Length: 520
Image 1 (cartoon, helix red, strand yellow):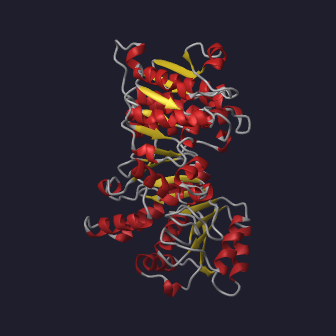
Image 2 (cartoon, one colour):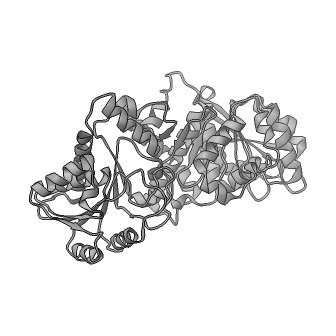
Image 3 (spheres, one colour):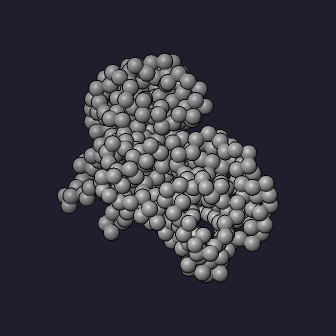
């Protein structure tokens, strides 16, 4: 499913009207109806319920007026609260205001001197609020009076359905620069807008409903929109059935180069995740002094001890045996728990340019490239990097806070600059590709902010890559499945108590979920 900017969505609307001949008032009618259908799902029965509908002067307000009419027709008691002068409504919005008035229904002008009191009285007897103040064209911050209106709504504890986007939220950034509606549900039209699927916007949007208002499918699926929201159907479609004569050697061989004294857990999690992804054979190469410790906890994973430093991390002397191990693998996963010992950093910098198999670069292998990111451009193999904001900041030479302010743009620029698939981890993980495409992941929860979670992701991506997924598919599918497994674990165990090992254990259920959807 594509994800649009406000301008891209406006272009789709214009093309639907001008090229396909769909009248704007038809699109508005469909939009209002979709809002009512979602309200029907929420409340089960509209008859006898009381609705307060906040209406602005633009087309978003027109959508709200359509919803008001249909809620009234279905037996609801509707209060239209207009935050503008009636004369300010133009075009299709004006038509729907006129219809409402000809139905003999009143409007209440909240923009007047006593408007706040009118709103307070209305909310005393309301079952659900519809927010139709501002649409996707909103930028900046709302004025003082609108801010007071929004704060009253947010403090009312009433369910709120936002029309297309919560008022006060920027469609292109997901930022709220002042008071912003905290919706329980948001009904957006055609395809999602960026601000609804990234944080903090996703938190303001509540549960997101993507509604069909009869916009032509060819416009909504245009490749000119270089962003996609990951879905289970998309991920499930990337899996290929295993042939009847499949064996462990044909299902992908993964080498995990990871671990150090005191951090063997990261290495074990990554290796087990590669197996859970479906890889047929996984070998964990780690410092020789901790090999037995790792082997005792990994019944299905082969282990190999490599030369180490006095601190118990991989030494530069491990270079040749590591390259030999890579020659017997289809994919290398490198980084979890390696440490940043100088000899280990040197090992990584010597190893990467000599690789002949695709690689997933994570954790301390990324830290080893800080100040030497040029080595990424020197790779001769497909690569996926999986930085969290701090690691990305070190690679890019900026603070983590700056990374968080520009997640989509930075993921895209990094992928294109270094010619690697870039997984920028965090809430709503972003995947950038060298071709300029972006994927945004909707799965996952705060309970996954736990030690080892990223190690599981790195191994999962490596396991998928070894089975024939493209780097782009492996990264995107890995992120989606990782988040879904975390959601399943949190549902069963609760967010606070979810561990990285729990995410690992729920990976099969997550994969089965997307495969079942694909088969339907």
